[in-house]
Length: 152
Image (cartoon, rainbow, N blue to C red; front, top):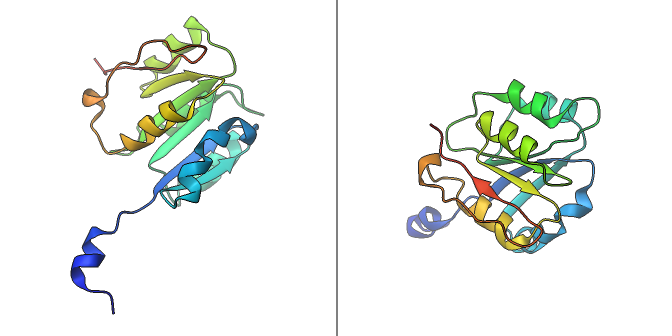
């Protein structure tokens, strides 16, 4: 039997769903996975996400703009409204101002462009329980552009 004090201090792993047909682009998350802090599930298509969505939802959902069979924008539109406390991010293979504006207009918490950096993804995952209005705006950093928006 585990003492009550120990049971109360256990932290649930962050459940991350990644809708992208290129899982190798997310190798920067492997340290968190190995440490037992993250439970990452790769879903290769929008259909896979929609099929699993009704049964369970993740803490963080990362959706690529380009998905087989349906655009990431269309998928995000179908998933709205997002469950309370969930962070939704969109990832693009190349930065596009038009895609960023469209993603943020859908209510996602951030727009990222590849190549992805581990520190930025870790920051997104760590803030999964923070209210959207408390999320900061990140300036452009090298080839990675991550901006979090505050809903109007």
